[in-house]
Figure 1 (tube, rainbow, N blue to C red):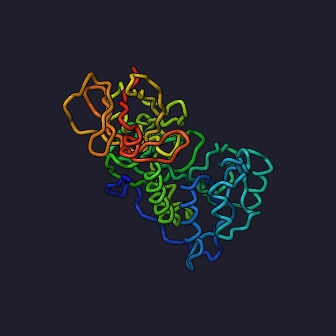
Figure 2 (cartoon, rainbow, N blue to C red):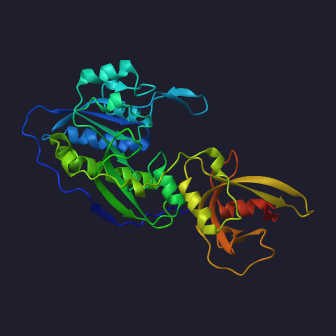
Figure 3 (cartoon, rainbow, N blue to C red):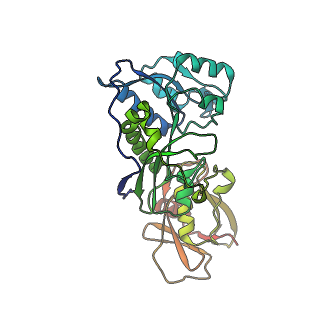
Length: 357
C-alpha cells in the first residue's frame, strides 16, 4: 500500500537560550495535562527527563480526560495518557480526571500538591483563571502551529486543509484568551504535499517535546518570562474543531483542494464521497466510499463528459473542477478494510463508475 512520506526541514526560532539549572537540590513540582496518544509522547519525554540523575523536577501529578467508552462494547477506557502513565508504573492516585478543570475538589487537590509549573499538550479542557493562578511559574502549552497562526482545536488539520507548505510548533504561556499567550520558543517545519494529519501531529508533538525539555531550566528560574515574545493578535488565524458533517467531498472543487482535505481529515472524521455504479444493463446504484490516500493527478486528456471515473496506473482518477484530476490510491467501503484502488477496480467486474450529478 502507498505510504505518505514527510519531507521537511526544521528551523529553530524564538528561543534565545535556556538558563542554567537551579542549584537547589529540591526537585521542582511539575504537573502535566494531556489526553490523546500524541500527548502521551510528551509525557514520555517528561518521564525520561525526570528520571535523569541531574533532573531539576519531578512529576507531581498527571491530569487527563475522564475514561470514555470506546470500541464496540463501549467499555470505559482510560485516556491514552492515563494508560501510558499506568504502564510506566506511575501511581494511579496521582492521575486526576476531572470533568472540568474548574471543579473545586480537583483544584483543592492540585493546590495541595503545590505545583510550580504546569505543562499542557492537547489536554482538551478549558483552564479557568483559578487554575492558572495556582502554579507560581505559570502554565505552558505545546501548540502544533506557528502562533498566532491557527489558534484553536484543530491547527494541524486546518493548516493542511489550507494547503500550507510550512507549519511548526510553539511553546507558549497559557492565558485566558485562546492560545494567545506569549511565545517562549518555536520551531518551523517545511512540508511536502503527501503528509497526513496523524503523521504531522506526531512530528510536531515530538519537536514540541524537545523544545520543552530544552526550555525547562528557563521555565523554572523565571527567565523564560523575560524572553517570551507577545503575539501579534492582528495576524491571528483560527482553527475550529472538525465536524463529521465536513467529511463529505465535492468533486466540483479543484483536485488540489480535495487532496488537501483528504490529508487534513485523515484519521477522523475521514473523507467520504458517493459515486454511481452502472452495470451492463444501464442500472444505476449508489456506493459510498471513504477516500484514504490520494494525490493530485497529472494532466491527462479529458475523457468523455467529465463524469466518468477511470482507472489508470493503479489509481482511480476522478475528474474535478478546472479540468484537474484527483487520483485515489486507497479507499474503504462501509464495514470493510482499507483496500488499494486496483483491488476495488477489479471487484467492479467491468461495471462503470460516475460522479453524482
